[in-house]
Length: 352
Image (cartoon, rainbow, N blue to C red; front, side, top):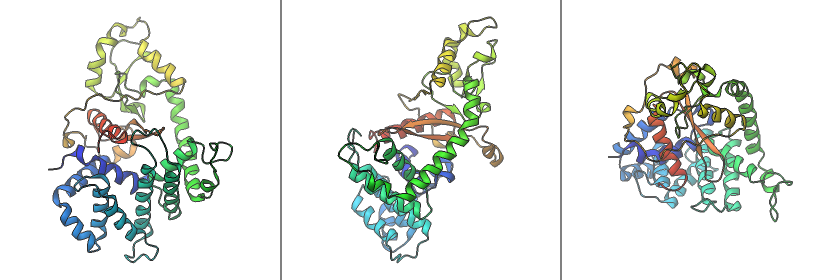
């Protein structure tokens, strides 16, 4: 019986390669779907369907053999299936979107091949192969998170432009990937516009947007997503929390400052200074909690989810630098931290 932590590598690969960055589905939905699929069909049945040309089974076997979820890892088997999906002759008569997903998965495989297990060394030729495949996906109109991630790493390591390219290397081959840079630059501009207004509010009162409990790491998209301390402490220094658990955990520390005439809470002072400097707290959890997936979500109406007022987010650092943001309106804070824990270990190669 497959449980949700075991399914996370499959879920992570799916959401990284087969959903556009604009249309990321709720993690709850994907987790439940993947766990149900892995438990309903074994690898022998899935492989038989894939060999018969069933595209859904082909995709399922690709995810299984790439991640080791529900089947043994077998990159050769995965590539054999991917070559059928991305064949220029398109014998399966797939849509552009379906074919682009195949290119995105191959881009992910090449990109991961470009790093040693400890992520200390980067093979730029393998990363370039991944970038070429990501460019094809972008050309087909499909911008998955892996497309943007590859572009981001290439830019941050200096290989995008001649003036920043490391000695002994050429930026020309990356400059040719015009569709990759088109979608990457477009996304950067979108983020700058979206985050501008929120950043101004956050700088004015950052204590409304970050859980004050040490090591939590949960950040609110809207100030209303967190609950503020109901004590007598001044509004400017009032801590906010993602859950009752975090508030109880932080109370012994905050209690001496929860007075009408009390001194400012040093934790909030430090938070303000950190935000002004543009720093953030990773908030990684040392040990996961045993939270069943079914109890790890809060039911919300479509209108509540669309409003974003309940949305919380956490950062997951990438070993090669930078990071991604996990956001949810339905995950409980406890379950969100547990998912972050497992995803961080997965990214670091500590889980397979």
